[in-house]
View (tube, helix red, strand yellow):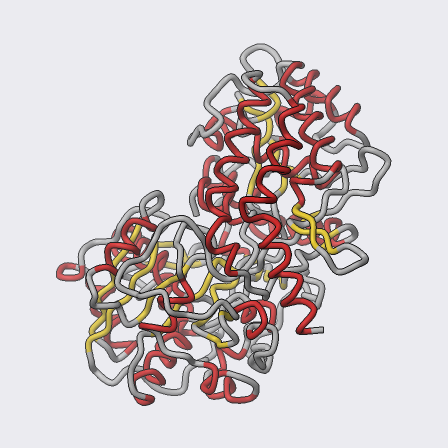
Length: 543
């Protein structure tokens, strides 16, 4: 997943998003989404029991860990899901596009496995929101439609009601057991697919943990590692490693402010006050103090002198010219660094206490949206749910190995440690298509050794698992996850764009820190207060 998308995902707070208007959907939906969504009966949770992890997960979000690749794979789907018909899917890929279907042997085998003739419309980042709007405006909605939580798409509720199938009766409660791989998703995953009191699609699970700094240990060795016990110590370490064409931190100031706000005890997107009201995290003293600390870092000269939206910070970190970057979560910090340099094991900064408060690590939303199903008769909708159930096949299953790696001997081989490794053909034909399939839906996240490049895969799993355990000590949930706000879908995108621009202006010296609070005072009248009221109402109704 790209930097722009995963970093904006960290600010996503509920199903639906904002900014780009959809045409052809109408706007007749009554604004009752926040109240109705609090009452829906979520699907029953039945964890996959076909394979046991080496490191156990827990209910607080700690991920399962697998240190090796299973020799004996299990079957997770009883029969071919499709009925031989044509289906279309709109999704997004995060790597190079695959070989076109006409000359892609894997794609043809995928069709046979799924029992359908699949046409995949593969969007890219940036650009997915424009493709999404263009496809919807064309009038012929795809059978499967990935809806991200944050990519500037407005009037999602209207689109769903007008064009998509309400799948509540097919998956609510024990009904989901007909689709065992979908049943392995937690209630927290399903909450993100609820709009207007109805379940609209299969969630796309994502790691439970949120943004962290990942550091190049070779850079931070000079300062005895990246870990710090206070802002002063962290600043001193940043100064110590900066010099000789090396800078401690990437220049994406808004992400540094977000991670530092965890240290200063800022809430996870929203604070639920004693009277039930909500306060946006950037409109708190804790965030303001964190932003002021980012200013101190800037004045100390520890940020790489680049664009606040630079795209190659990970490469520069691997090369040693940047000491640390913000990553979506601990797993990505280690994996993405290994991708840049298989011999480089990123160290994950655990939030330290600042401002006289204990740190709050911010859990992620838990999904990257959901895939909705086009309206149709029950037989058609259930067939499409069967296809999604196949795509959600878990690690350790035959279906998951085929989806991710293709056919042994053609698309992948097993290395000396038993891990599947894509061949040249696999990279060309499988990798890009699997990226899109995985975006449409996938199994609940686990730390899997085969996910990491390099020769220290088992250790990578142990290290990420250990970091997650440390983050659990201070991790807090976003209180509005699973709740819906019409005002959020209307205003959130523009609000966050303007807030990010102001952070950059303040840290760069073009504007003053004193302009931060007036900005939020103005936004309270432009939609922020309404978001807070609607989310608070939904929470109250569900209590």
